Image 1 (cartoon, rainbow, N blue to C red):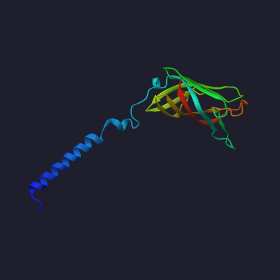
Image 2 (image 1 turned 60 degrees about the vertical axis):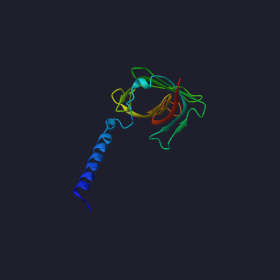
Image 3 (image 1 turned 30 degrees about the horizontal axis):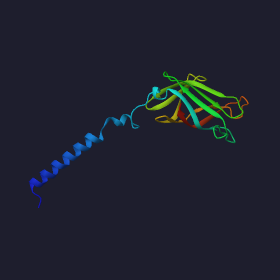
Image 4 (image 1 turned 60 degrees about the horizontal axis):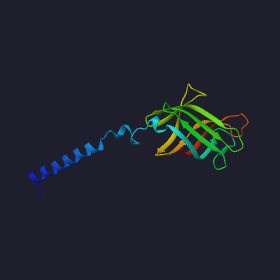
Length: 160
């Protein structure tokens, strides 16, 4: 038989358990689900791609180029104020240079390209120590004929 004393004891444990859950369950991490906020200073420096694949967005048929796997190069330079230069050089073709400015917005990487400074795009990224996975959205000339097409990239870079 449950006595008043047992009920009080159970109620105290229930209240204590709920209080502990509230304290530990309602932390300030809700504003930042990915952990600490990154800053543009985290990206500052020179980066060299170990993988760079670009895929057309609207072309039919879809175009794709694997720059590094085919012997090309790609580098990214980011200054402390967020200005960046991305140079992609497919083997045997002219370098394609994209410039602009990065901004850190809610733990996302926002890029304002010099070719269209009135708008911005979110570039996917993942930063871990000296490794950067980058998914740029930009215009790319797949066959070096001067005709640029909307493209997405998938790049792995290492800090130099």
